[in-house]
Length: 144
Image (cartoon, rainbow, N blue to C red):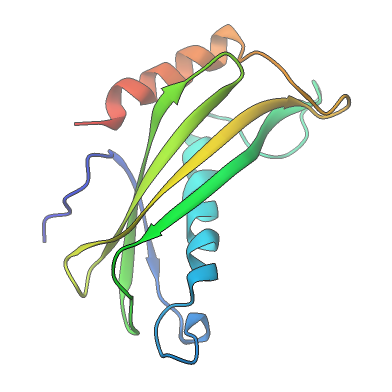
């Protein structure tokens, strides 16, 4: 099986029965949980997690959107590919492809904006040089 996604970072999630809706396919709200898991694991590869650090700064989700291309049925396994597609002064974008193993195709794609935040002031802060380097390494590897 060839996953047609340009992103080098990938996780797999097995669909659970409880994630289905009355129409017997994965409920649209579940996709945002899948994206959260992919984003958290991806940020962990940057050595950047969502726990408050001793510096009281870190990432926060500012935006997420999802395009639903095809319904997903049970049983199935999804592969979610993720990659940094833009890096700004205090934020960066992560794009995702959600691939169905049963259908052998991408069934959704999504876009997230992550902002670096000072947790005490609630204001955005510039991405520091060390983080820029880590994000930059992933950014250059994100698209094949």
